[in-house]
Image: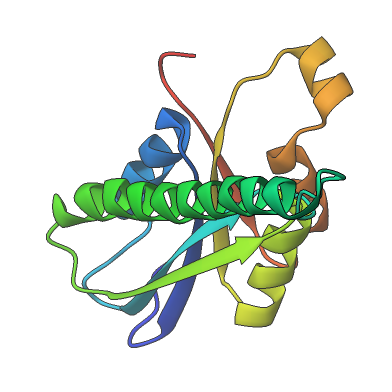
Length: 163
């Protein structure tokens, strides 16, 4: 990542996991240089929002479902704030002078991440690995595996040392 005054845009996919925070820390330690203008993009992807609940219980049921929907929305907003705060705490421990952007997407993580790096014209995507075994990865799929194959930029997958 050397190269005069070039502006490097590095996207780090963050979530609730220790693995993603470790990947962010690794990125800040290894990919940024004082010789370059850098932009760090913290990208968090909220899970797809379920369709609004409905009820056949009339107005009382609708009010109850509305409360549940509002609680789900509040939880999602609180989760975004929590993840971004954790990421900013990691970032604050480094004396790196860079531009910081925060992006929150919603939907299937692998599609949102690949779409974001393409739209942002990212130089690098950094992700943590959850360390799923073969069976779990085969059943659930791996977001990092998918992004490594489909993202329109180099992808660095960081494995947490305790895995």
